[in-house]
Amino acid sequence: MPREAESVLAGILEERETTPTCAVCSSDADFFLYEPGRVRKFVCWEHVSPYAAAVDEPGDDRPTALRI
Image (tube, rainbow, N blue to C red; front, side, top):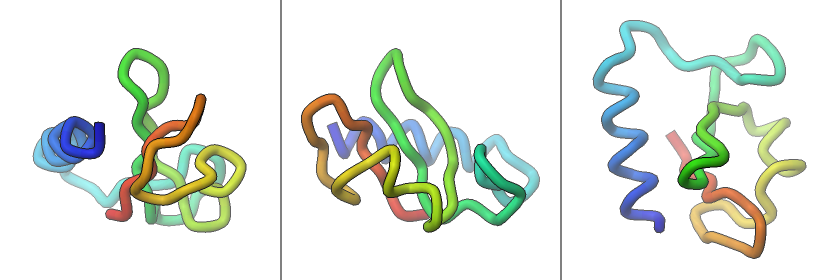
């Protein structure tokens, strides 16, 4: 799934005109969380842990977290 997540992230970033911000706070986003049909959001380094246990590796019931 990391390849699919990378492709989705690339498409979203290509369409954006501004730097992504965290979905939880107003900081610039450091990660993109992705799980097909369930999760598609940007988060900062402070808010990635509650949502994804491993960065860049899929886990059970956890979205993939890609560094941006």
